[in-house]
Length: 219
Image 1: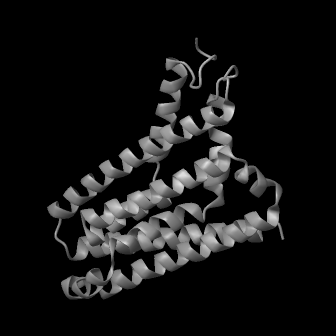
Image 2: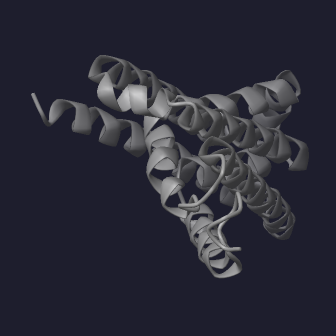
C-alpha cells in the first residue's frame, strides 16, 4: 500500500512532519512577524498576522503544485523582481517597527494601535510570505521527495502534502501567538516590549539587506 496511495507511508509521513516542525521552529521572517505583532498589538493582531502568513503559504503551495515556482526558477527577471519587492517590504516593516519602538510608551501605543486593523496585520503576514520567492522554491524543492513514486495523481499528492505543511505551520503559529501573549503579560509593557520591537525591526532590516547583498553578488 505505501507508494501506491496519494500520501507516503507512516514512516515517511513522520519524517515529513518532523522536518516541517523543525522548519517552523527556526526563527525567520514569519516567526519574528508573528511574535512582534502579538507583543505589539495583542492576541488578535498575532492571529491576524499568522492567518496572513498561512494564506501566503497556501498561495506558494498552489503555485508550486501548478508550476509557477518552476517558472520563477526558469525566468530570472521575474525572480529578481520579486526579490526586490520582498526586500523593500521587509525594510519598510523593519523601519515601522523601529519607529514604533523609538516612540515607545503607552501613549504612543494608544495612538498607533487603534488605527491598525486586523486586516492590516493579515495583509502584512500575507505580503511578507508571498513576496518571498525563496518560499515558492522551497515548496518546489521540499515537497516532491515525499510524493509517492506510485501515486496515481502526483499533482493531487503534492497538494495534499502542501495542505499538511500549511495546516501544521498554521497550528505552530497559533501556538506561538499564545506563548508570546503570555510572555507579554509576564513582562512590564514598557522597556521590554520596546526592546523586543526594536530587535524585530533590526532583524527585518538585516533580512532585507541580505536579499540586496545576494542580488549584488553576481554583478
